[in-house]
Each structure stands twice: as C-alpha cells, then as structure tokens.
Length: 224
Image 1: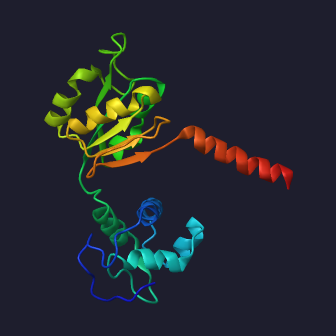
Image 2: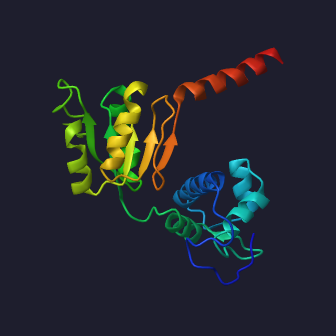
Image 3: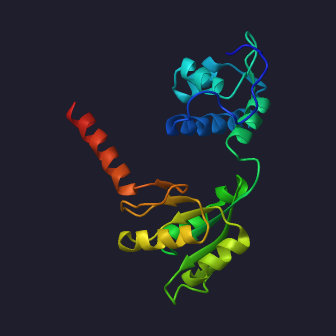
C-alpha cells in the first residue's frame, strides 16, 4: 500500500513510457475492482488484490505508483476511488465507437457480444463485401453494410476503433482501408502479419496460436 501523499495528475505517468504489460495489468486491476465494488467491498489492500489476481503485491504497488499516490498506509485503497481513477487513466470514462470489418461467424459473434455496449464501447457498424450478407442484421441488431461505405460511415460516426475479422489474404488491404477511413486503433483477428503507419495502434489476436500454446502446456503436463 502506498502512502496517502499528494497525487500526481491523473493519466500523466512520470518517467519512462508505460509498457504494454503494465497497461494490460491495469485492465486486470480494473476488472477486479469492478467485482469488489459489486460485492460491496469498500477498501482493499495491495496484498488482497495480489491474492485475488495471483500477482505480486509489490508489482501492483509499482504499477499504480506510475500514476501518482493511491491508498493510505494501514487502510488500503478505496475500491471506488481507485476504480474510477484507473478508468480515467485508461480513457474509459467516455464511450468509444467501434466498427467491425468482416461479417463471418467471428464478426457476427463480436457484433452480438453484449459486454461491449455495457462497458464503454459501442458497435456502430458491421461491414462486408458479400452481397448475400449486406443488408442482413445480427442477432443484436447490428446491420451489415457494404464495405465501400466504411470511410463515409467511420467519419460520420466518429469511429475510433476497428475490429478486423477477415481472412488473412485480404487483411492488409482492408486494414489499409480502415486506416484511410481515419481509424487509429485496430484489433486484428486475421492470422497474418500486418503493417501500419506510425500513429496507428495495431493489436493482433491469433486464436490458433493461443490454442497451440494451450496444447503445448497440456502436452508437457501429460508427460510429467
């Protein structure tokens, strides 16, 4: 737990740039704090957080110290206050508009995931180039639009994030279209190495690699 010293401005870390791993842990902390808040827990210590998350309490304190003073020695962190400050630091206090490119099974499943619209993200459009899919509607009510409309719709809706759920051979071409449409953050599900210009954030999720990783650990456990 940190001392109750004067906080630095929220969202302005001191020193070096924040690593991706630290940013990912902030999301884990936020989810845990959401659970604690729903359970009616008012305060929590770094040790208690570490126990819940299977992390080191020193790592939690180090991560939080990058953004200022949190908590009071001997008392702990206020769950509500820490949760709200982390949400501000992560930029989650306002709604972020999202488009999905690709209306296949994965794209439709992403469009219908209810957690997005409850947690600061709004799916505003779903795109495909298949005439048989254009004009259809997902179970959650998101209409499939022609991919040619992506630049117009993205700018009109002020979309900031794109989810790319398309086959690998066309992923780079559609990523380039997304970027030309003014979108600066992309989560890619296509199993392909992609390139973006500076100023655009690209994150890739390769489900096959994750499954292969699981099989690797399963196989090691079976051989032990």
